[in-house]
Amino acid sequence: MISIKSSREIALMKKAGHILANVFEVLEPLCKPGITTNHLSQVAEKVIREAGGIPEEKGYYGYPAAICASVNEEVVHGIPSNRKLRNGDIISIDIVVSYQGYMADACRTFKVGNVSSNAEKLVRVTEECFFKAMEFAKPGNRIGDLSSAIQKHAEANDFNVTRDFTGHGLGKEMHEDPMVPNFGTPGTGPILKEGMTLAVEPIILEGRKDVFILPDEWTAVTCDRKLAAHYENSIVITKDGYEIITKKSEGE
Ligand code: MF3
Ligand code: CO
Image 1 (cartoon, rainbow, N blue to C red):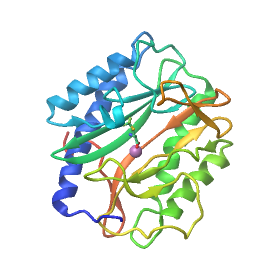
Image 2 (spheres, rainbow, N blue to C red):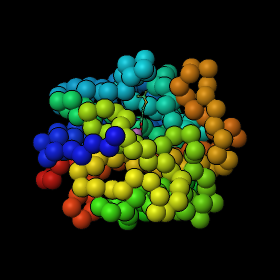
Image 3 (cartoon, protein in one colour):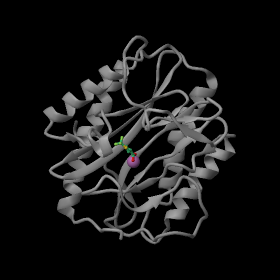
């Protein structure tokens, strides 16, 4: 069932989103060669808790850390570790924050030092895919319109989209209906309505779409070891469009 959020619920999700946007501001300049992904997770947890939020990934089905930190060929759910970032890496940091019980979910892929031109392109196209989807984010359109916009832009740039991980509704729960796949057909799927809240998250692959899960039971890695990038925001469908929830508050 797809829930429609009240203005009170949306306000709480926005507060969670402000906290989350601020975490990215703090983490981005830290993504330098020599920094461990554990350090990034610890900093994120501190910033979230000091702002009155909860890092919801920690403990989610036993997930051990406050953030997902997926480096290079890692697609999603990379577990923070003592691994040090190196010049030329790309790192996708995916975070879920709740505030008074309401969730915001976002991911950014940051470049560490100087990255290859294809890595640069992958990161750029992944973000563009999100905004291509947003061209269809308004009442009356369908989830398939967003999905297909993501797939088309990725494939037009000679990349692939994952079939294994999707965007989703969110609110009181981290994952709610509907699913928001990164591939699909225009004019299909649930109809968008004012007050729906969605995490839209293009996960774009430099090479083949196949992934496998490491023995840690979380980290998804590309089978061909080529790069993956991930860009995600939580949005609310408004009367005539959409608003991004996971952004800094006005005036900040
Ligand atoms: N943040 C992820 C998403 O975009 C889910 C993370 S799963 C967790 O849906 F176990 F790490 F929490
Ligand atoms: Co998500």
